[in-house]
Length: 250
Image 1: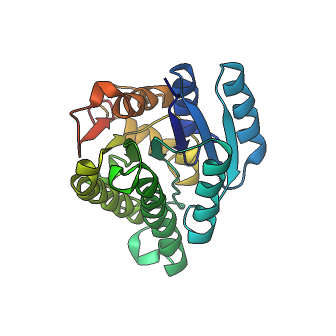
Image 2: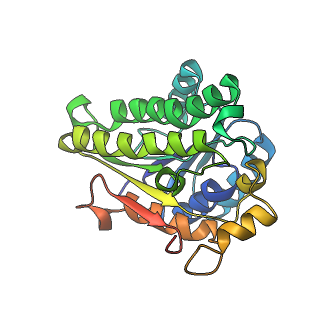
Image 3: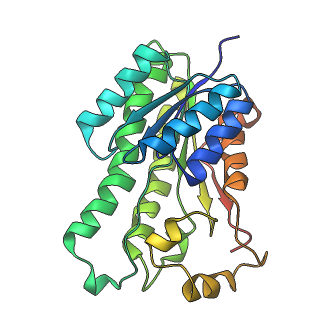
């Protein structure tokens, strides 16, 4: 059987990198998208190749339509027809109340987190859809528990962007399931990645947030990767439009 070909956006670190490692072990070939850290992406690609996977690194800002088109064209040319997409790329900005957020900050968060997911899903559907000559596939959107908690005083813009991803996941899932494409999402909680520092959630703020986690600990990227891999797999064949919380009960 042909190996699945899966694109992971924002794959050079954190949840994206953990998902790539797990999928490589499960027999996927991977396209690794990154925006800046090409060196980290190439190190990861070499690790995946040692596991028997083909791995292609492609730089692209997912919030820029022309760059997304080039990203998918390279996958077509160098790996083949896509069967899976993990919309993982996302950004946060330093903690701030809404009244102090610059318009440029809000636009950047929404452009990458929301528009980027739309653009990548759009390109993936064009390739996967049985109505367009594809063989079907699966899309997993990475949201956040912040979508339901709001992140007041920290990053309401990020929380709002992830709320949009929740709605997008549900709507797209219903729109394309008849074309052989399953769409689902995961909502990570507080996970051990460097996104917390960039969002002002290191140190005391992080400790305070962890106090509200019933499981009493921070999550691991590998735990989110397991949920993503399951949603991509045939084992989740009857799971459509679902949002799976991976948040320790928070």
